Image (cartoon, rainbow, N blue to C red; front, side, top):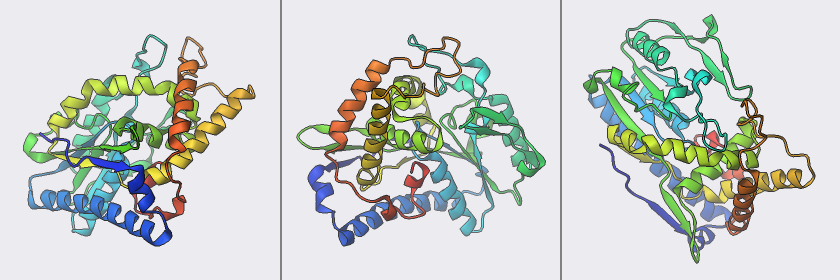
Length: 334
């Protein structure tokens, strides 16, 4: 069982002390090096256990699962081990979506994953077969059918890395003999404090998701904030189980990240509020396909959260995203 450890606690003074081009470059380098060392340690463990054929990476939304899995694949490949990443996001099944009392669809539920198809593909890949893999388009929110161009195969008994919120569900990972897989739970675990706590781990993931959704998922900041209560409620139901099923915990918080993410989130929230005030705010993409035809679940609540966030985000020193290195996990959100 993995345990949460090495919580990062940063004050505004800590952040301000690292301002300035030279200081900040070292701040970035130290943060990134610590994260890469964790990848190296896990890679060494996997390589030293020859029976391991699969790696299951799980963690709540906006934890960096995809980039972490990609970095692990790259490291294992560099060590001479064939490896392939498989995303459970591509197995979304929107035919069994549940809703909360405000009409929010539960896209985080295990019922939205086509477990049968995912497990079938996993078994075939581990058996050395070539598999045409399907995909899910988050912009259009529709399934992209498998084709010859999407065909993948593992060679020479390579490693399969399966990542997704439910990667450590026993309906997925549990279908492989336990001594043939290793589980990794990844999540930012940190606090940013001033005269009070400004942001905790859930807030850090929320800010990452606001920035990512606005740039890559077709959802403005108020849509993400309106949907966020469902995210927290749904993932909490499986958090303890997946952490228990993991062998390793990885803290994906980078000490410098708030100085990059916070100003972007502030800009995204401000733009969404401005469109609301001008009567030009688009309906939430998370609600757009629901039978209730509600534009938002609770826009008033989202606006309250947005205005509080603006006040707190304004206190974080702002740094240009150009300082983020190409290999950083933050690029999954920027």
